[in-house]
Every structure is written in C-alpha cells, then in structure tokens.
Image (cartoon, rainbow, N blue to C red; front, side, top):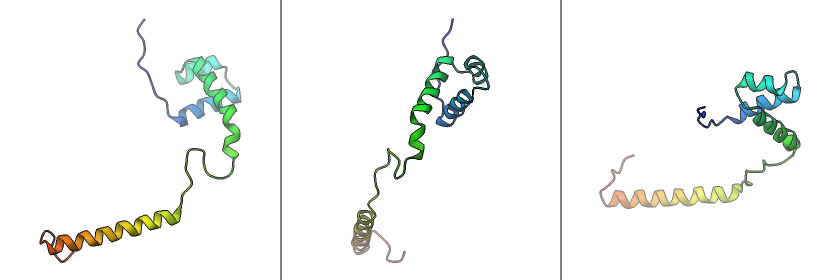
Length: 101
C-alpha cells in the first residue's frame, strides 16, 4: 500500500469539516468519505473547535496579536523621516543624487 503525501489543510477547510461534524447530519465515516479526510482527523478538529469555541466571543485583542503602541509607531516614523531627509541631503551634496525629486 502506498502512502499519500502529507497534506496541509487550510483553517477554513478544517472549520467547515468540524462544523459539519458538529451538526451531526452525516456520520464521521460519511464525512471522511465526502471530504477525503481520515475519520480520526475529523474527530480531532471537532474536539478542537468545541474546546476553543468560547475564544471567538472574548473581547479585546486576539491572543496572538500584541497590543499596538501608536505613540511609539509615530515616533519611529518621525525618526525614519528625519534620517531619510538627512541622507537625501548628504547624497545630494555628494553629487550622488540629483537635486530635483
């Protein structure tokens, strides 16, 4: 028996299959045939979805996203703008950049 190469399924596909399993209109075996995925994998995705369902309704930032510090980002933009202006002037004086832009 030859082994099938490893497949990576998208999160959307996993959610679709897990939701179909939760709905219970088809058996796990029928879903496995329909979506061409092993029944154990469907059971795992279903369990993961049920365990993490409450996370969808949490308020605030998503767990993986760090909070954004707007003041720090604006300061960095100002610093980079200042550096670009300085380097543009230095290159123009050195004759490596035309005066008109």
